[in-house]
Length: 510
Image (cartoon, rainbow, N blue to C red; front, side, top):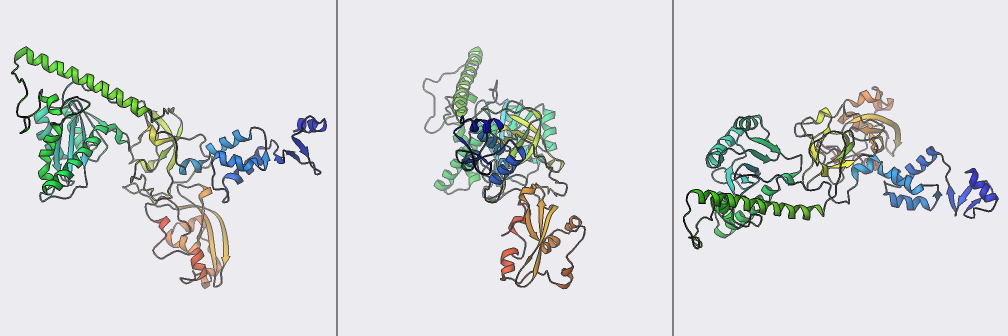
């Protein structure tokens, strides 16, 4: 800043002024010297304090611009905000979804590559059915709708698969499905391995991999609703007719009906009992006609895929990571779905960061998840990830986090940061500032000692077993319900909503 002072003395810098105390100003804004610690304190106060609440870089720059000035100030503020660990985890993205569309390869023949999925949550019928097993051929779009029960085992599904699919169409080359419990069971995998079928599972929480079967599920549900509403029958009684109606209806991507692609002609109905100019084809002509139809279908599917990719990529953006990069993982990738037991209106949007260990395909990555998340599939689509520009310096102790089989957990105190006493009209309450598992020191909360010792017996080890001596005489007892002390510091009986099992957020004041 010496050259600025020299410029002021020589009247070459009209924008800068010195006051009587020798403080340097730039257009009535305080000039901050090149002291990184000082600038860091200013940025922390403007971003992380309770009066700031993590504003965006533009808002933060506008606020600081009124009072302070230093060179490259806007750039430093943008960098600081982009590296904020809390902002990365809690703020929503306002960008296009990441990852360009990469369609699956077009099959070479009929019923060689199939999709599988379930329609669940249906009313239980008299026969006990409450779900539908949807199986679709990716080439002809023909489908089978099989009523099933959620109580079926993998062995039962294997018997149905042999009876309803293999007996009619042979053994497929590949099966694409989500990571449902049936499709990832050891029995199912061993069965398909013995048959020579390759299993392709979608990445975690990315149903677009099986977008075709998801769309068929919607069509099927609409058909069953219409059938039940019109004919007042049970949905399982309508299912065979729904399967026929779907397979015999026109498909835009094929430019024909699935039955026509599968058998060479549509099936007869009361409205269409014969093909105009129908003739019988034998021998070489039949083979030639079938081969020409397959080529025709393949060209139609290529055009449809190209059209869909062009339309989809307009609403997406490319995003590429490298092995060794750190990323945040989206908590709620789909409406109504939450991972790791993290749920609720104010739960973090992202968890992490986690290190990328491998790139699996053009838009999928394998993450190094901690041992407590070993039950979670570790491959994720790029749309579920967010770049971590700076790995947090402080390590969060998660060794005390108890992960349940359903991936829920209960936040637990891992560190005591401070202690204080608050005097009320009737008693003195001891408060502890604690850091919670899966949360940083910035997210620490003040909690009453009585609550911590009652709810978390291991809390004694964090304080060395020390207890305020007045506790023995009852001086620190909680005030009765309805008193000012209870309203300010207490909690309703039965525990706090924020500390309930599976919430994924630390307890906080009600």
